[in-house]
Amino acid sequence: MSWVLAQTFNEMAEDLQQYIADIQQAKEYNSLLATALENVTDAIEITDREAKYLYVNPAFENITGYTKQEVLSQTPALLRSGKHNPDFYQEMLETVVRKQIWHGVLISKHKDGTLYDQEVTLSPIVNEAGLLTHIVGVKRDITQRKRMEAILREAERRWRTLLESVHLVVIGLNRSGEVEYANPFFLELSGYTHAEVMGKNWFEYFLPHPQRQSVEGYFLDILEGDFQTHYQNSILTKFGEEKIIAWNNTLLQTPQGEIIGTMSIGEDITERQAIARMKDEFISVVSHELRTPLAAIQGGLSLLASGLMSAQTDKGRRVIEIAAESVDHLVLLVNDILEVERLELGKLRLSKQSCNAAELMLKAQDQMQIMAKRAGITLSVSPQTILFKADPDRIIQVLTNLLGNAIKFSARDSTVYLNVALSEAEESLLFTVKDQGRGIPIENLDSIFERFHQVDASDSRKKGGTGLGLAICRSIVQQHGGRIWAESALGEGSSFFFSLPRLTTEDENNDNQENLGD
Ligand code: ADP
Image (cartoon, rainbow, N blue to C red; front, side, top):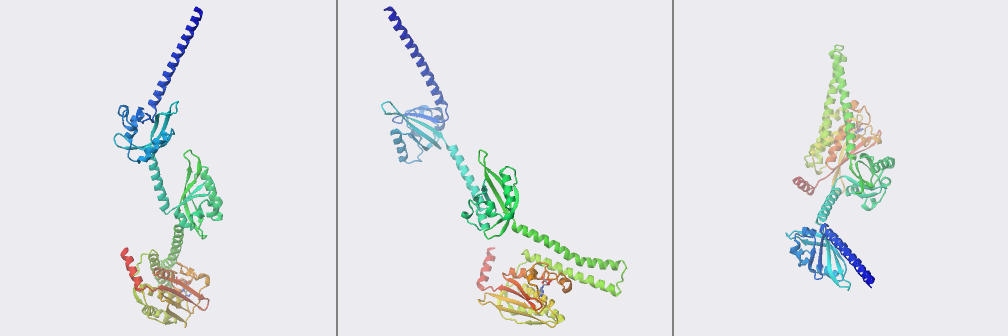
């Protein structure tokens, strides 16, 4: 019996020991949980089934501004911001009462009155009988993240506005070279629609064939991280026109560093390059044109100065004559160069006024009469009273230039005609200067209007002139909104035409309004 008693006593002692150990373990577990709750950065709250606070952790105190003592036995209604309508809170509560988890974003009010955004998860605690006993809320302050999101959205909006309004081409390509972004300026320049561009292979669709390979090579180099940040190439517009673009490229990467494509910004330098070319051409021609007469003057004068030739001899007098002619030519040339430059830079303002075509034609005839007489040419002018608006001196300048050329390039005893006609709709007039001279080869009919272009390089020497007259005429006519051109049959003669819009009183009013607007 006593053995049985001892046995029972031992078992009880063991149970008791186990019990104490279990209690010890549960205590340690509880204190671990408590420490965890006290240290997490998310606010944690436990309410009873009536939603009265039973527990809040220090993060809750931090985020809400209320101490534990202040909120115990209060409800979360304490934190309401008034930014949600009552249905919103009702739905939140009903979800938990249905024993489901509620998750969402809540705007709450801090003790000091400021509002903040929090991401909230409310979980129901249900007892063994299946009844809701408590609600556990985990809340994270996301004001910072939201405020950041807003900054990013704003930054993105600014960039987008910039890309959409800038007068530069912006093209985004993926790794395969397909267009993922094209800004409105590119669409305007290329003539394509957004749909026609997106997803197309850039090199295949938009580059002239000979440049495809090399530009694709640059692209692959950029993807490899081998930076070719600047280069120029042509692109093809929808109408087959080539535009030269100077590019600036950047690599597009994900935050993890994965390369996803390129973004390129390009400037259309087509016009700038053409102007630079023309300027170079102009300077080289001008310097040649100036040097020729200067060399004649310099050579002649040094011959006389050295005493090798006397100014009193026939030869000497001829040298002086040539030098004087060269000076005249230089004066003419310099004046014409300055004139053409002023005209083309738009520095010369037209002073438009009411003109009578007949008057201008007769004045031009008067000015050219002596030259015509000397050359044995008859000037046949058919004046007509047509009223229009133009700068009269400039129109006379065009007429005398054309008459002068017609006289220069005609044989003696021939006639030069000057006519004017009104267009059918009477909205423009057409002047014609027609001669019976040597004519102009068809391939020169356009180029003679370019600066220094002459049919025969010896024309300026033999006939006088600078090769700038027609360029000046073209500028004047174009500034009046008109057009000038020539037709000719070799050996039979040439006709020069220029049309001018015949500004009405209404146009005149618009003109004045525009000026007032300036
Ligand atoms: P230039 O001072 O040499 O006359 P222009 O610009 O007036 O310069 O004319 C350019 C060239 O066009 C002339 O040099 C000449 O070769 C040709 N040309 C102009 N007008 C006529 C014309 N009526 N008949 C034949 N050739 C002409």
